[in-house]
Length: 422
Image 1 (cartoon, rainbow, N blue to C red):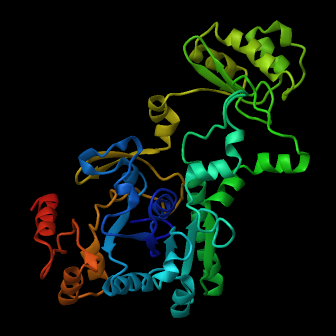
Image 2: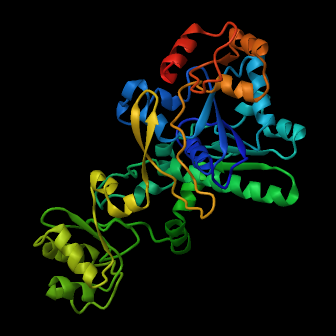
Image 3: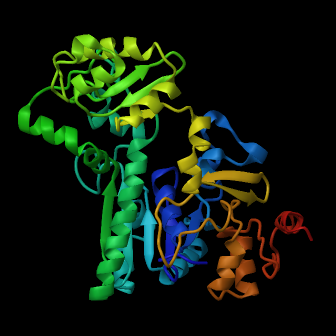
């Protein structure tokens, strides 16, 4: 293992997208992330983008859970809570994204944990925050986009409110968890004290829109979406996406007259402006008529020769095969014990001495239950008692020195042996 977070252990109580994305990033940086799951597992084990489950494993789950160890605990059982507290006692950070109050009701809230260990860092992530009128509302990406005003910044003039086509609030929320945890770890290094960190999806999405929201707050200019495909509500021509004879190109900000001269749009060559809003639909239409006379790649080559800020609009297969994407090693392949070769998006931050790594595939449900109990010092007799009572559920162990003991499920032993190839 390497990574700047080597030696940091994280007790991960998160599910779905935002929290697991954050703990995966921290795990890539070297943290030992122990994922604590209920008997049915993380919600994403039973739900997936496209309803795709190769070999029974959810694509969505596998996307955001590599480099972690899975432990299945019944937190309604005293024995399960005992093990959870043992994991927390050996952890530097606790991360959860339950609705506010759930961890308190389980006896695992920040105040109690901090009383036992003042150095603990506790990060709670919710939809709207730990207090306020929306505190108990469900927090989900589309709902946050609706509340956050995002849908009025996307699409074209006559479209209904239009959501962004991926979970932007979840991704922004995950990044905020990472930033908050790293900041708290840094501060603890100076003070020796932990603290509570609160992150919520609504705040994260507002921060992502800081440019647009600050503009509106200071001008009261309502967002008027263009009819043309110029993409940014508050930005003018020539910014936008343009159809060519065989695809599309994107253009960023530049002088309209200079661009018009390069593409042969003679009616626009006298426009000495790089952000024209009143005539943006007309300008887009005029420029697009010229772009449609040539292919996407020909236009890109010609424009780049003149240092025009442009890019081809790539399909997903083109993106994954893109030379820079491959140079950055952003598509990695793992060997999953059931699925086989599994492609994932790799770590996105570079460290000169302690590189982030893709070490292990997403864990099978409860795969590390017995391993973690062994690491915590639980003996075979107590482990068998916890498994028999249902407080701890064993899954599959790929470590040859960890095997089901006592009265553990024979099915777990058989599956463990089959995966390990014994």
